[in-house]
Length: 92
Image (tube, rainbow, N blue to C red; front, side, top):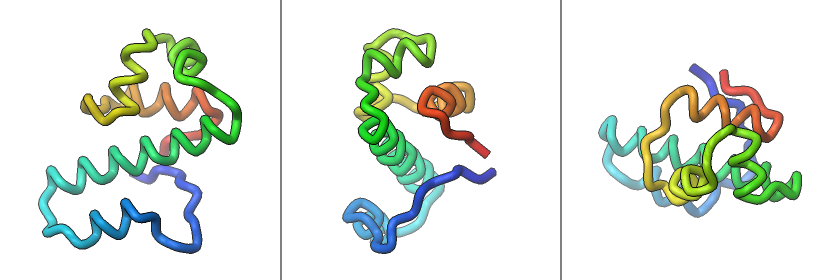
């Protein structure tokens, strides 16, 4: 599976921090979730979309989006796809 992510020339502070941690599947899953949220927030900012608008586009309540963006929940594939499509991106 591949997620389309716009890569910057320099790694972000979060990427640097995570890359220094020992590998385990749970850590990698959390890292990928955080990277998804970081990219989603960037796309939202570029498009001027707030959390309420994102929730409406995803067909979920605003509290669900807040939990997702705060890292307070696990992502299902459906949630990842809904969030991606809500900002005009594709999850591959």
